[in-house]
View 1 (cartoon, rainbow, N blue to C red):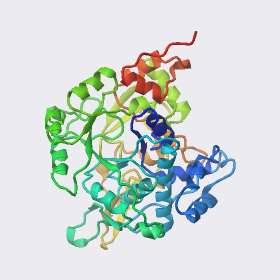
View 2: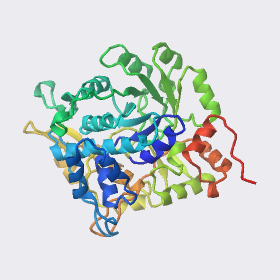
View 3: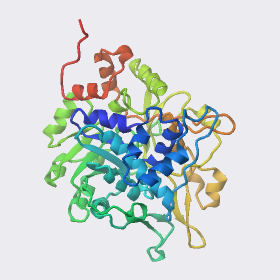
View 4: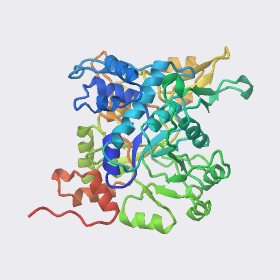
Amino acid sequence: MAISGWELARAVALTGSLGVVSGTALDVVMTRRLQDGDPDGHVRRALGAFPAPEVAARIVETYWVDGGIGPDTMYRPVPRHTLTTTRPLLELTVAGAFVEVYLAKEGHSNPVGINLLRKIELPLPATLYGAMLAEVDAVLVGAGNPAEIPALTRRLSRHEDVTLDVRVIGARSSDGLGAMKFSPRAVLPELTSPLGRPQTLAIVASVDLAAGLASQAETRPDGFVVEGPSAGGHNAPPRGPRAVDELGQPVYGDRDVVDTEGLAAIGLPFWLAGSYADPARVADALAAGAHGVQVGTLFAYCEESGMAAELKHHALDLIAAGELTVRSDWQVSPTGYPFHVADLPGTVSDPATVAQRTAVCDLGVLRAAYRKPDGDVGFRCPAEPTAQFLRKGGSERSIEGRACLCNALLATAGMGQRRPNGSVEAPLLTSGSDLEPVRTLMARTIRPEGRYTAADVIDYLLGRPAPTPAA
């Protein structure tokens, strides 16, 4: 969330590779940047190019704070998405995605993509539409089955109304509850010219899912990204029986190793991810028929990433000393997916830090829809206050070990919410478990304290010589 922001995606794209922005909670990210003063004017400049000037003006008038909010001031909240999201929130969501992609693409013609989580359903159509307004080149979709995305991009390119199926816990198909409807013309009624359709890259963890998506014209993507279990962030759960090791990490087996020959036989391009961040592994991927690799961890620690500088540099110092531990936690994420966590004092991985936090759910990005006893749809999250979650029909076993990723990940990007008691939300650092390439980059850079850039990452992955100090 905002770690792979527009600055990082632009830096990667300028090298000729595909730079990808995170598409999560961009409405919140945009409004918090404005409340921080938008000191370089980037957000307001991008909003100046938004195709609905009156919408852009309302957003700036509502959220921009000249000079930024004070250190003791809370960020102004953004409403939470529902199945009947209001027009102002849809405008924010469309504009937030537009701003992020516009800035990543500004000043060059190289490709830029956006990464969306199918699990975060409610803002997905509006986010995708905003990215398409900014001429995004590719949409990468994981954390769920992305079968609807190719058709969604086709309809949105024509400004047509779309419906996205939403899973409602406890609902029957006959209830007719699980549908998120989005009308582009309700947000931007004046637009008529068709938009370009971005390529759809489905993030998968099995040949079975890839083959199923490719078998139907409506669901067939333009390619696949195959993520292994060592990649940072959320991972697919093991395909075998649920088991954990002595550290509580999910145990993966042979069934979780993707058959690259079977994948290549589908006939669509694919990229491999998860411990492919060195030149030898890039060569292995290409030899296996892949078009390339997806790399996250190396870029997360580079200078252009959106991670708060103090947190990033502290983590880099620990990595250089071989003292940073990354583990796959099956409980921390409200989604129920395994999630990679770096153990750092003062972050959500620190039990003492967690114990000091008062549970609150004021962002709701990871809430799940459920059928209420009266037949209506409600929303709940196992990281919200316990009594509230149980009152909504949630189970006690779903609560243990959960953390509020929404607030924690925004704090990781330096936009943690201030609380009335004077506290600030603690960050949560996610990272791939293979940190050796980070140490390698730190050792070969000529910049002070081992700091490196996105261009340094690309040079390293492509096997280019290390830079030499100026004479």
